[in-house]
Image 1 (cartoon, rainbow, N blue to C red):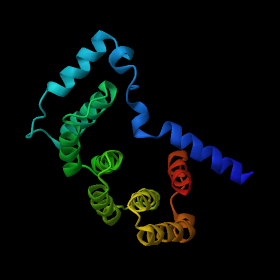
Image 2: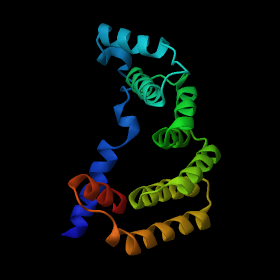
Image 3: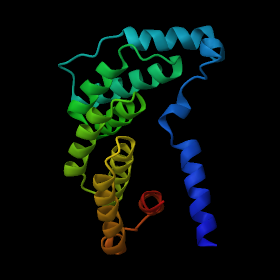
Image 4: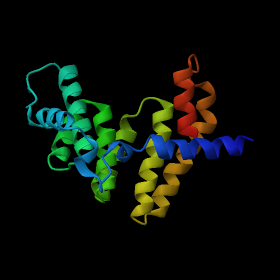
Length: 180
């Protein structure tokens, strides 16, 4: 039974947690968006982000722009947005690493991924980022480095997960996601 749940969790995460799943279908383009939605997303992309604003305001603007890029299916300017976001927030680095991997720029993705590994504080994030970076290493035929990261992730699961905070359903969900 646990193997069935693991398989189900992997399938669900592949379907629902893939960043590209939020993008428009390339065959349909903007046909899925109403004219008003397209206009609104284009306005979001055209609006500059105030460099003097509070970090939380800038982070929200970067996230809003990232969503607009995904909804419009555009890549022009997206990397610049992700790089700026990554400079001020950890989640921005995760998104940048994913973007670089999808674009086939594995060496850059590995650099960002290894930065995230060195900064990761929570055990679930430590496991997840190691799995993602190991995947990038596999894509570049660096099997030994991938194995090293996966062995470390397995050790974290084995020795540190039992002590991890499980006081609410969200914490448990993140631990289960990392295990999967």
